[in-house]
Image 1 (cartoon, rainbow, N blue to C red):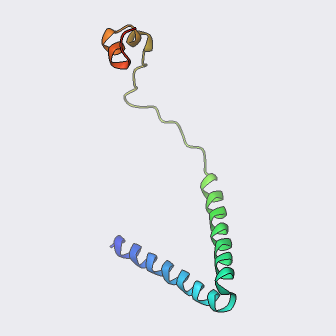
Image 2 (cartoon, rainbow, N blue to C red):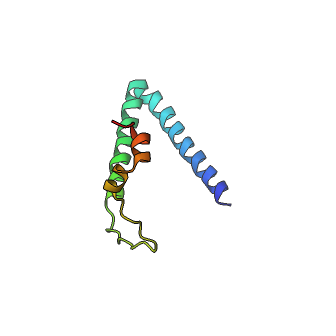
Image 3 (spheres, one colour):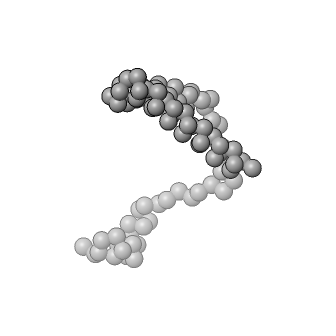
Length: 89
């Protein structure tokens, strides 16, 4: 059922922009319609950016299976790794 609501929401957004363009094109012309729409979209982006950056700090969860530390010194002495990484010098 959720997919149907998503489609209805997308259709409503499309109708809104089409109505906005139709109204603005008849009164402001193409240049004015694009400029006004760009300002509206810029406002939405500023509000969205502000909402997305304002959030409570998340807790760092400890992993149930901690990853072992990678020992690069051990791999740099392994002959198979040296040949795979770039050949033997």
